[in-house]
Image 1: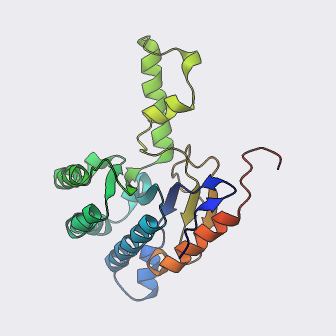
Image 2: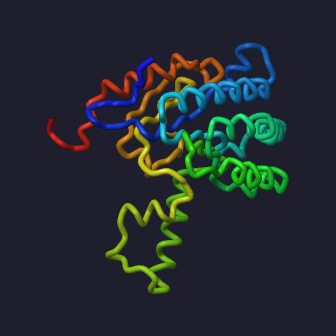
Length: 241
């Protein structure tokens, strides 16, 4: 099958996905919420494989937001176990596919065991010639990231390491915890039409697609359809065409 990424001489390099609807899918199908998250991990595996095939440069996934800490402790504990299991189950597969795995967000709150697991898998998958950068947001919030950027840049100015007039887009990207630049395509499953504090700076010119399906029902074909729709988009970036 031909690649789907070329559009008006623009390349689809960076894709972001808000994987919403695991819990609602589980309740709808009379499962425990934890089962919805398990099914969601299986979907991630398929989407990662397809992203490699489509020569996507980076795939950034919203796995756990800073607001998700408000959820029941039983669900949070189940998610923590799932993170460990997913890393154990898929690390070898990621290495074989040359997928570079990176986590970002307030990861320390997940505990020492998960932090150590993350550090190990990031090191193991850190190859120079990666085919895909897989970025996973854990305990992440876009507003919180921007606040932290402002603090860090302010400290740089106060210590005279940076001048206010020198602040530009690259400066913001340098101090952001997000390991990717501009997002070209943002996909949200679950039916809600909002960005929920995800990559607020990076999605400034992203094509945004809202999918009614819950994440466990999101298929590779659905993903390909999103890529095809992106291909047809007129991306003017303020210019008149």
